[in-house]
Length: 99
Image (cartoon, rainbow, N blue to C red; front, side):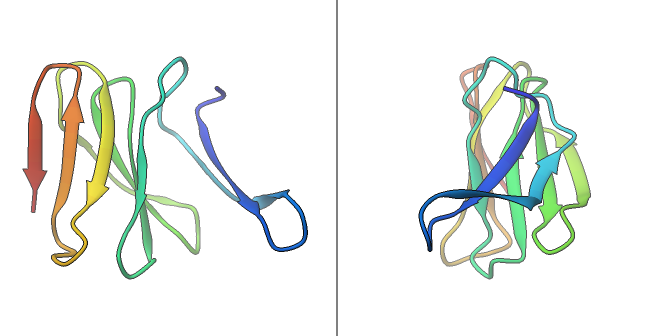
């Protein structure tokens, strides 16, 4: 609930990976979905302001932000076979496919 995405290592118990924290988006109070690209290079998330955020997995830097919905962008998902496509859904009642 602090406007960040955190990652955990499950190899030897459960421990937070501090070096893999993604910040910048607004998600307080919402369970906005996240998705990792099929090649593992990018992380995408929705946010409370209707934006879709893309981060580089290695550097944790935001590489692009796009306004995709009026209201909350509650979920995002990468297409499993066509890696150039991402689906989003929002509280505005729409589902969109982005190329």
